[in-house]
Image (cartoon, one colour):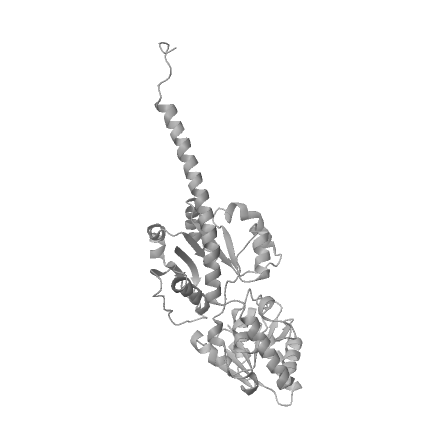
Length: 380
């Protein structure tokens, strides 16, 4: 099966999924992707498993439609409906019977913008998209409100095998870990305040290790116990996680947060705000960590509970997290995606073929009407 992937900036877990599509499921892949954001300076990814891999640019956009037409995909996987040039192409392809899937990690929040999206869906989304690939339940709720009753699950599955560890959490360095951009939406100011409060409450406080870059780095710089690691490449994340006992993710808004699954796979306990979409799948309050409001006092209290836990309690939370993290992997997602897409593309292409036959028959009937001579008086 041939698939064209129209994507935003690449991440390690998305590349892992695409690689599994190619190597374990036999997909032939064409991918066009956006340049990575400056705040996430990833090293180049190995895309040698693709038949064609191009970074989106003005030059590529001029040739994009022709490139996709020549590749002749059976289906298209699109990062979202945010890129108008991608939507333009998928609308044309869908008319020809190509099955189109769009990923979605936005949670349903009931905002005015989302309600406007529901109203515009029949005119803007439905002509270009057959179904959605969602990260979790909150995203599936949004997809259903947009009119897509049976979305696919599993998007943003972490490379859990890379994070599994035989190092028990109780022998790792006693430290909290934050991974992410240092920007306002990540609630860095409250994290700094929470860590200060935590240090006041605990006789032997754990350090806070911070992996990331951004405009709010000075909010954390100079706080006793804070270690600034800078940006960490995906290949180095498992090692960073094995040098801590608890991930803290206090975001004001986090559509998903694949780092929650990665941390759980590594055996870390997790403290995350209820605004993080991934808590619906990979965090159970009181089981492998705590779900908290994004306020300093609640974050600090959860940090204190974690650092006061007994070895038995820590091991139980760690093991529970590893089990939760195993729900989705890139290989599971690729197999599931292949099965569902084969079913759907066959149905869509059958419908398109039937429509084409009916159109041909109608055209033939019209031609017959035109070409046949009208009965003359002599024929009567």
